[in-house]
Image (cartoon, rainbow, N blue to C red; front, side):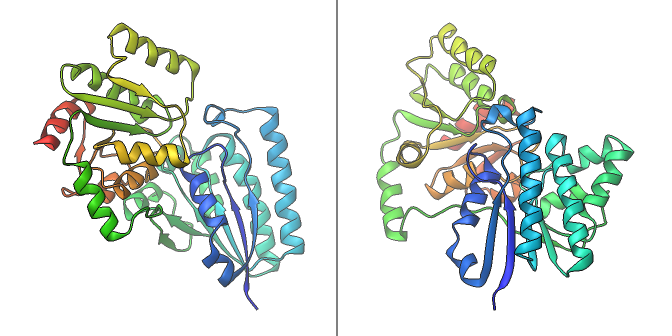
Length: 335
């Protein structure tokens, strides 16, 4: 008989890194061939803007999630449990409540529990107070951690109550065969005027989109066009973005595509010559957008945040430690 596996995970919508990975896991044929699987979706935020906020709906969804997990433990009786863990705010306390349920189940039935962390920031959270430290130590006690890269293990230097650490880097689908990819790259880079630069991620200011917009203003005398794609977190940020474009007469140099997926997303990657991602997002761990850009052969300019130095090397991109170096990095990349 197959091992019973219960997966408690995020899935789209909203579309963010953990949700995209959750979609991939839930659709995995290999997983279903080797395990008897049951999937429970963590529902909390309807949009990117809802992430981190507290509402009555989130309390209701947390209670609903707890009941679903309780019933699965009693009826399905899993031998392994996969759980997408959160690190702070309301989501952490929701997950802490669920963790007590999993630990109680473990008292009566042997089970291997795996917490998959798609983000970073545990060290900041536990350093903020003794309460946070003790709660996190309880939360990870006797469970296995699944991290995106060895770079992120330092996030748990103050939390040593877990069992084992496993590394599972993010991945994306390959859209090309080898020969097709080589032909595509040769054709695209024969003509790079105007140079097409892409920023594709959630439009969260700390992810660096505004630094790319300022770069567009600083290079508006060059044959460069900038493409932005992603969903907005805050209406004020959206207004500031378009006000800046109007005030600096960048309409001919900048195109905003909104949230894209499917064919529209693939076309943007195919059209672009460079991908720029100067993120300083506090929870940036292993950005899927960089992997997607690499799968289309795009050189990357990105900051040294999270696992980005683990992903990129001198053959695939330029890593900067300060967004003020964006323009120099772009000129270096073109050289």
